[in-house]
Length: 348
Image (cartoon, rainbow, N blue to C red):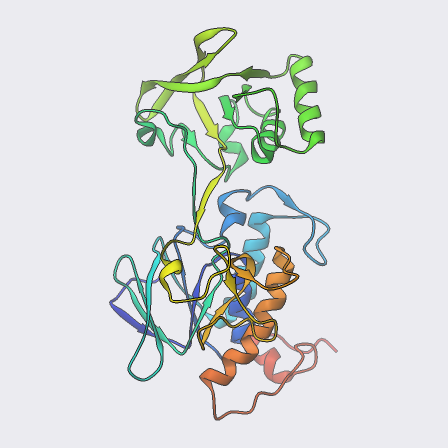
C-alpha cells in the first residue's frame, strides 16, 4: 500500500480488489494501462480472503482445487509486472466528471483519483459481517471474537464456539473440530441452511461425542474485554445457561450494500449495474462494471465469468485512454512485446 497523498492521476481506477479486480489489472496492463485500486478491506482478495481464505474453490480453470488465499496470491504475482497501486481500508465515496471529461473518484478519507475510465469490480458492493446482537461485542473482536477464518492454526487448542447455521458455520465446524480443544456449534433451530453432506458430517461428530451441538440463541458474553470466558445462551428446553469457551466464531452472513455506488448516477437493476455484453460498459461512458456487481441477460455469478468480462472491458478502455492508437490484438504465447511486459522469454 502506498503512502496516501491528496491526488493521483492514472489511466484507470478499479473499485474493488477481489479476484476480478485483480485480473483486470493484468488485462489492462497488457495494453499499457496503469491502474489504481480502491478497496474497503485492508488487503487485496475481496470475499476470497475475507470469508474463505482456506476454503477450497473447485471451478477455476486449470486448478482442480485452489483456496481463496492461493488464488489471490497467484493473481497478485501475475500482476506484479504492472505495479498497480492499492488504496486499501477506504471506500470510493463519490464519482464526478472533471472539466476535461475524465472521471474523479474521491474516497471516504479524502484520496482523489482522476482517470479516463473507472472499472467497478466491487462484487456485491461493500460488505460487512452481520454481528450477533450482544452488548460490547466490538471490544472482544480480533482477540477472542471473529467473523472469518484467515488462519486455521489460530484456532488450534481453543475451546471454540461456532455460531450459525449456513455453509460457512458447518464447513468450519468440520474443518476446525480436529485441531480445536473442543467445538460447540450453536444455532437457534435444529434446521440448517448448509449442504446436506456437511450437516450429516456434523451430526456424526456429535453422535461420536467429538463435538457439541446446542440449539439455542446467543444472549450474552462473559469475560473481561478483549477475552471472553463464556457465552450466555437461552433455549426453550433449558432456559438460560452459560457455555464456557475462549473463542467465538460467528457466521451470521454478510450485509451486502452498494453503499456510495448507488449514488454514482448509474441506472441500477435490483441493486446491480446493467452493462452491455460487448464492452461491459454501464450507462455512463467510461465507467465499466465487471464481476458480481453487474447485470445482463444470462449473467452467471462466477469468478471465471468476471475474468472474461475483464478481458473485453480492457479492449474498450484502451480506446478511451489511447484514442489515437490502433488496438492490435496479440497472444501472450507468441507476442514478444507482451512477453517483454511480463518479463518472460519465449519458451519455444
